[in-house]
Amino acid sequence: MEGLMSFLGLATSGRTVTSTFSGLFDISDTTLILVVGLCFLGTNLVSNITCRNSPVEYATTFSCLFIGALMANALIAEIELPVTSDLAQSAITANIGMTCAALLVMALFGREGHLE
Image (tube, rainbow, N blue to C red):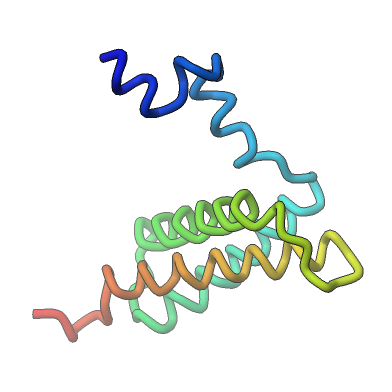
């Protein structure tokens, strides 16, 4: 068990699991509102492409896009893009993460009537 804990870096650094994921939600309120708005737009776009419009699939698509946007913001936060605004950088990184998540969702859902 000690080997597993030291492999994960939790025992040697003294960090906890909650502090490991604290950078994931380290975004401002304005950025969070922007990400939620972009996720709603992306959810409608993905639902129109896949022809699946049930509430469960809307919720699944929205949550996947939201997690993708948060993960992209956490991973690309250290990289400075050549833009003038932090909000523009957050929008660009959120779109990158949502694009990856949307491609995954479309690959998993497929088009209605085309999977047999």
